[in-house]
Image (cartoon, rainbow, N blue to C red; front, side, top):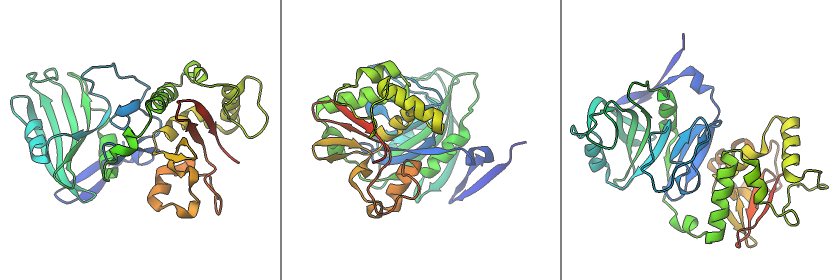
Length: 312
C-alpha cells in the first residue's frame, strides 16, 4: 500500500505519493516563458524552444509544424489572461469538468482541474487531462498538466502535483534567448537534441577534434566519447546526460563564448541560494573560494562547439 502525503494550500490541497517525494528532481528554466519548474531527473524534455514545455519518461522529438501536445507532463504559458484561459478550458462544448478546486500554490492562486474531452475540440472524445491553472502576476497564466488518451488512466498525477508545487515565476527575458546568433542557436538545439536522445553519432558530428576540449589531461584514444564512457564507468554518472542538464540552464557570454551554465564565471560566494538550487549536484561538493568547476559547455559565435569539460 502506498503511503500518501497531504500538503496544505489555501482553498485546497496537493496530494502526492510518498514514492514521488523520494524522486530526484531537476530544474528546467524557460527564460522566454519566465518560469522555473521541476521535473523528474530521469525524464526528458523537448529540444530547442520547446524545452521546459513538454516532458516524457523517455527521449522524444517534436514533429515540425505540428499541433504537438499530450505528453506526460506539460508546462504551458497561456497567451490569454487567466480568466479567459479558465473559461476556455472549462467550456462545456469541449470538455466535461470533473474537478474544479481552488488552490493557492507558492502565493499564486488558481484551480486544480480534471477535464474529459467531448470530442468537439482538438482532443478525441474521452481524452482526460489533469493539472493546474495558476495565475501569474499581471493577470497571465500557466497550465501544468498531464494527459491520458481515451481508455488510459492518468498515471502521472503525483508528478504534476509536485511540478506545480515547485513553479516559480520571473520576468521573461526575450533578449537573452533571441540574443543568440543563429549559428549558436542551431548548435545549441542540435546538441540538446543529441544529448536528450543520447545520440553519440550526432554528438561526434558536432565535435571538431583539433579544437574541441573535453579534458585538462592528455587526449585519450577514441576521443571525447571514449573519455565520457570511462567517466560513466568510474562514477556511474553519464556526462551526456549531464550535458543535457547543463544546456537547459541559463547561459552566460564570457570572453566572446556562449557558456552553459550561467555559473561559469561566478565565484560560489557570488551565487544566491536560488542559483545554487538551479545547479543542484552540478555544483561540486566542497567548492569554496574558487570559480565554478562543474561541467560546462561552450559554443563560439560562429556555432563551433569548443568545449564540454569539468574540473580545472
